[in-house]
Amino acid sequence: MKDYLSVNDINSLPNWIDDAKKIKQNPLMDKALGANKTLGLFFFNNSLRTRLSTQKAAMNLGMNVMIMNFGNDGWALEFEDGTIMDKGKAEHVKEAAQVLSQYCDIIGIRAFALLKNKERDEEELILKSFKKYASAPIINLESSLSHPLQALADIITIAEQQQIKTPKIVLSWAPHPRALPHAVANSFVEMMHLYKANLLITHPPGYELDPRITKNTPIEYNQKQALEKADFVYVKNWSSYIDYGEVMNTDTNWMINLEKLGKAKFMHCLPVRRNVIVEDAVLDSSQSLVIEQANNRTCAAQLVLKYLLEAKAE
Ligand code: CP
Image 1 (cartoon, helix red, strand yellow):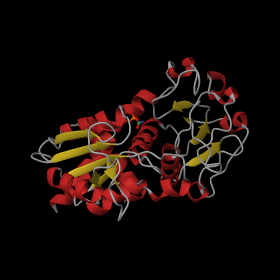
Image 2 (image 1 turned 90 degrees about the vertical axis):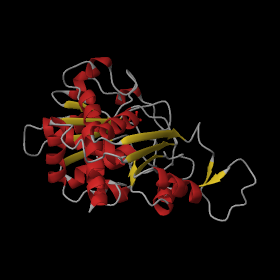
Image 3 (image 1 turned 30 degrees about the vertical axis):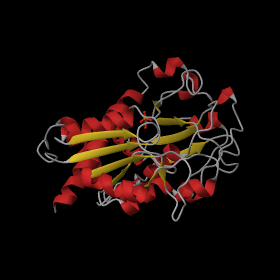
Image 4 (image 1 turned 90 degrees about the horizontal axis):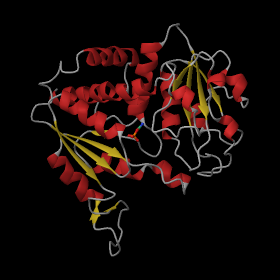
């Protein structure tokens, strides 16, 4: 594997899940692999879990870690080709990516969708520019379209928790006051396809995700019916994809509560707004897997770093 940009970079999901479980049992087993190697984590947006779990994963491998917030610390970067740079942006990604590749053996990039222009967001200009101009392998720390590290932690969590061969997994939209990107939901759906899961999506009409991602996944607009006999309920808000970036529905009836959850396990990538997305009683119950999902971010990131370090050493 040369980069980890999407879940499509996973060559064998069963092997990846097995290897992740081994890492989780013995996080320091590859302590020498990353000696004298440096991971650079570069953020254009905020983060708690992605930043710290990936840093911890790198430390478990003996790597050094450098972190920079381009929003606050770095020079404002230009990404367009051929621009006359006489306005606010001081540095072009062409130089920045090459310079960072001299300092770092692996580079992680977080750059969310802006949700103003679908075509622009779908170009994934920031992630793809680093991929184009950096010589170091690139890890996607959440881009406009995908969050593959989160999806990897999610599938590890499901694999650990599942008690039957083919559990019923429901991805449910939930209300949120702000417009949120589609990346987490996209990668979760893609990962469920890779896992050949029994997935059902529920959301209000108008919140259909990109059909190129959902493909033939069934959609049930009645949330109560969708949640019946579910084993895992993954809850996430996303803004409209059709009316791109719009918040069309804030119906609080879509919030998840214990009654709707039934006997299912509750999943969310975090951060989560209590009593907006999900009621306190769910998050505070033993049915909530959110803390374990966050825990599994470390072994997921460590697995990706391990594979990239091993590929570089070949
Ligand atoms: N789930 C997730 O990516 O969390 P952060 O935004 O805190 O990194």
